Amino acid sequence: MSLLHEGWPVRAAPPEGAPVAGPSALRTEGLGKAFTLHLQGGTRIPVLEGIDLAVAPGECVALAGPSGAGKSTLMRCLYGNYGADAGRIWLRHRGAELDLAQADPRLVREVRRETLGHVSQFLRVIPRVSSLDIVAEPLVARGLARDLAQTRAAALLARLNLPAALHPLPPATFSGGEQQRVNLARGFAPGYPVLLLDEPTASLDAANREVVIGLIAEAKAAGTAIVGIFHDPLVRDRVADRLFEVAPALQPRPILA
Image (cartoon, rainbow, N blue to C red; front, side, top):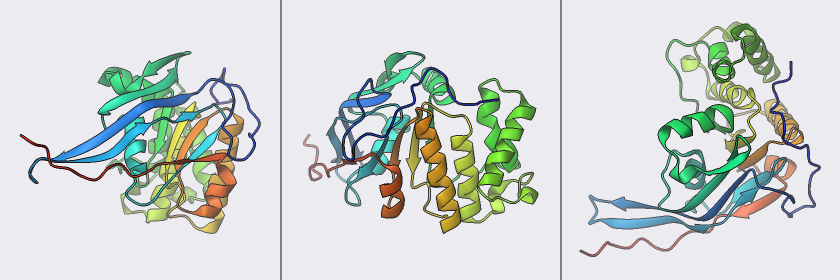
């Protein structure tokens, strides 16, 4: 049984540095985000200003820029963990575009279940839940029978070289690399139309980095639009179709009464 999303075209890789032609799966218009330090005299720290990003189905865009430029903040805005202070986040969901920046929590949950996946740098460990069920859960939430979801989960965990003896165990005591492999399997299992990857190979050895590179290539071939942060330049150069530079915003400034 194929778990790939239907209705998304398979696209060949574009010329290096050029965006893929066609409608965007994810795009932002004038996106802005700032933080206010209320215990520091109300100092406002702008992080993102005027971000215009577009990602097409089958394209992988790598976020670039110096440390502190706002790459992780942008990823959290795209996933809805941070609210945007300005601009729009357009996501193609159920055949139409919606503004994720204005979506209510119910719609955000629906989008995350069906359309938008996220692999964070660290696994949010669920106590007493097995690794197999952690990976299978998003598939079950989308309506796949539990036995089929667990079969798919086991296959991905095996592909990521997680020993079968660990599949029924909660990952709380796993190594960082083992937890990251569980996290990656959970993120890739459903075949989301849009996938956000935050340092997906940071804790992996060379063999498992190759597995992840293969998973990204297969997701792109299936039409998944990917936005990623890749500090490993070798991985980035092999998976990214182009870079998107995130420039540091203006300097912090106090809010005047």
